[in-house]
Length: 129
Image 1 (cartoon, rainbow, N blue to C red):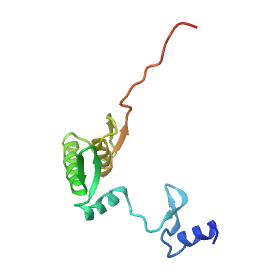
Image 2: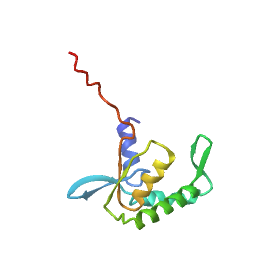
Image 3: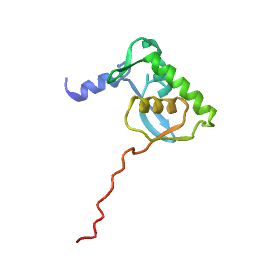
Image 4: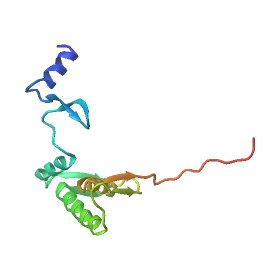
C-alpha cells in the first residue's frame, strides 16, 4: 500500500480518522467526523484518568484529579474577578506547571489566554559605528 492509499483508508467512511466536508465560518473544509466538539470536551474526558499522573516537574507530581481541582479553583477566581467568555487573559510567567494550568483554565472558561514573554532581552544600542 502506498501513502495515498493508507490516508484514504484512514480518513474514509468508517476509518479511524474519518473526514467529512462541512462549512466553518462560511468556508468549506474537511473536518474529522468523530472529533470531540471542543477542547473543553477533550479536557473533561481526562476525568477518567483521575489517579494517573498528568505532569511531573522536578519533585512535584500532579494527577489528572489535581489538575481538575486546580483548574476549578482558578476558574472561580477568574469569575469572581469579572473574567467572562471572550475576554483576554495575559499570562506573564515562565513555562512552569502553573502556566499550563492557567492556559487550560482560560480555555475552559472560553476566554483567550495571551502568553507574554517573561524574559526581556535588550539590544546593544552602542553609538559606535
